[in-house]
Image 1 (cartoon, rainbow over the protein chains, first blue to last red):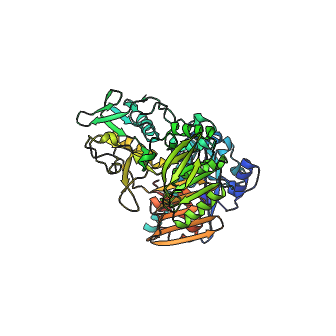
Image 2 (image 1 turned 30 degrees about the horizontal axis):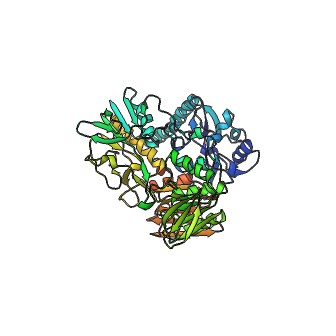
Image 3 (image 1 turned 90 degrees about the vertical axis):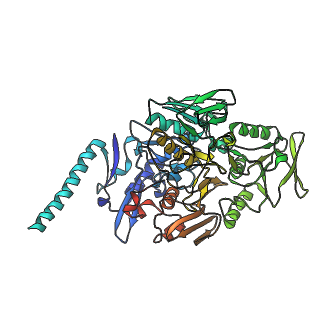
Length: 162
Length: 410
């Protein structure tokens, strides 16, 4: 199973992902129709991309009155079946992260679907803040990252002691 | 372990689903008073407006292992012997009992009750009756007694179908339970644009059948015509069958933070309950679909033997009315604490802030992340530095500092 990975430290705030996402899903370049959002914090000059977490037990799925939202056990994606959606918006209130939302018309519900297994956003992310990885690989990367961080702390401690 | 669930709507089925996954060996029985397979009541107005594309989509996902018994209306519970008796002369034993009987529409005017032209909308059969009346009547206009959430949603569905409606409102405004006077006016304007008529300060005295339509006599003596009358004056929890039991009720069943009633091994969830409100810190009814889902999951988890606490609830509503999204939460119908308002064209925003925390809001028109507003209110995150964003409807999750993210409760 592959998941979208965000490395916030690498994001430059170019927002190319938002345009790519919108174009992939609607054929138009409208950030309001993007499933991914880059949050800008100008005072700290940091940029934080946020995208649907595809929750294990998704709040949006639980409240959907017509079962239009279901978790695909194979891909891990919480999928939205448009045909069944009545537009009641319970899902967008239920998601505490704002990951499932309304499109630019304020009427249709949109959410990240990993572009069916070939995410458009990662293709335009030149700093590699976004990647699409196997869950198993991520675990290894995380272990290595944490170990590296702890190594730095250990080094500092040794220096402090010397 | 034998689990018995009384009531097979959203809460009952979600509880069954949770029990199935947490206790695969458990024996789960669900009793439904209705004869039809459990369906989503929330979607009924969408069935009327045809936004629900197929009737089949109304039905809830069926439980995989639980035994669902239709047409079994519970009449009494023997909490000593742990037995439930139904009107169909059947008895069911349990180790753990969950009550999810929901609520029924309330018709305050006794003389209107029983008339074939006076309808309420709670069940699928009600909606079928309404559709039938609309098809047969020579007058299309629907008379809506009360302008609460249900009737406003019905009016919205009628507007979709180009059928005119007349609200007869005893008070002087629409949605007086969830929005303030200004909010009411914004919505009423949209309602009028969409073919709705508002008669305020009046009630219906009598309904008389005439041919294929109804003559409706108002208290002032005025007579109006319509295909039928839809009464939407709120709901009352279905607790009649608990009369002879020691289970403590106020308007609804009182539950503690574990969703347990005053009687051991008897739990309750959904519209039938009253639980502590986060903002007022008092017992209140939170008869809402998402609350029913959350409460039932927690109740079921605790029935299996865990001790999950149910966080205090906040009221909130999101509805589509006449082309606008109306989103409210917490204290919304009045002004209290620090009040911020913003009006622009067709949109009306209001937030109420207490000690830097969100305690209420109204958004008529655009709001970017409703879920973040609800999370900010439920978790009482500090918004004092985000007031500008908050009133614009632009709060987003990443604006909150990292430590707050770890305690997300929705």
